[in-house]
View 1 (cartoon, rainbow, N blue to C red):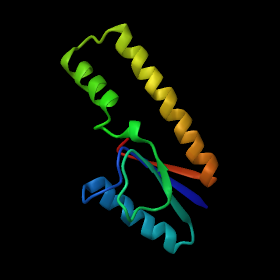
View 2: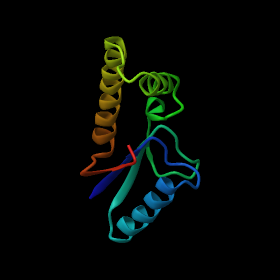
View 3: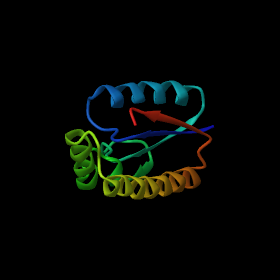
Length: 110
């Protein structure tokens, strides 16, 4: 089975990256193939699909984050931008699924 892990980033020594690495090890020992889709990877990452707009430091994501946490009632324009970004990310995830013939997706803190 081809398993895809999706996250904002799979890099460094944060809890999400370390737990993902543990799961990947177990799945690979069972004979599965694992792939990453994230906004940031380590140099030693599994094969994957880099989507910078998924990262929490992406300028658009950061702007939206700051707006919605600053304002309890975001404007309709803010929601339009959220939907536009979501559509772009959705297309990238579909590309990831198609490219690596993903059978199972495991979202990680996303």
